[in-house]
Length: 277
Image 1 (cartoon, one colour):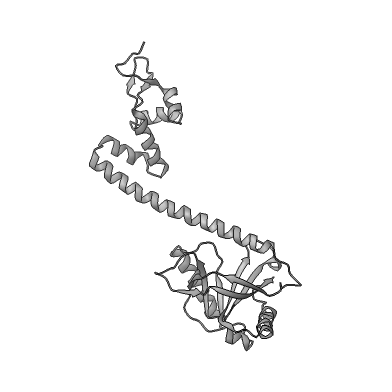
Image 2 (image 1 turned 45 degrees about the vertical axis):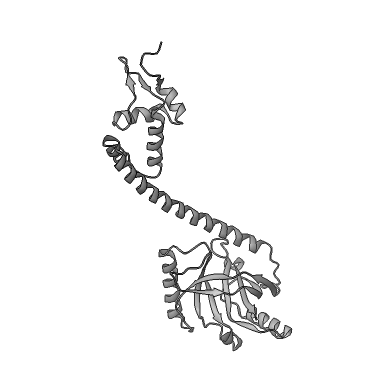
């Protein structure tokens, strides 16, 4: 026979109903956070089905990082106004966490794409053939304009750029790259850098950026030392001379396989591209 005026279920059954365990329910009762509807003379706890929603909400708040002490403070003084404020605050935190997870998901996808890109390349010595690839428009968050080969200046600039991208949370998993003036490369000034860049997925209005135009690009892939690219540039310019086509303003260098992918620098892969005007 039912002992109470409304239907109740025992602790174990309520735990199964709410996908939890008896120990959690007992602990919540002990700290006066969530107590059973009734406790009989033998100390057995009984819960009503209407308590499921309260327990579910407590679990959700706990899962997004709200301390049990703060949840208890609300429960002890609950009212519609405070519930609304609490939920709006937690909604904001959840949105921030979702954005964080989406960024991580994007980083993972970017890294998978880079691994895949390097898996299907055929090298002759350290270089591939020159390919003509159709590239979409891309947004690049950039460093200040450099136009220098001074090692200390370049080192400070790349460190500042990496720090900026990390603190502004614009890094989506693409290794930082470099823009080199084509005119300088033509004159075999291969150490002059115009900008360092980080590729992003959408227009970064609040940040210094350049647009890498959509269109056809002459592309070569380099295996090994990122900086040992002299022959890569020669092959690219030979392609332009042979095909009587005009190169764009910049040469873009970006890692495909780097320290994350390979332990041996000799197996790093760098993509070097110049737009075909």
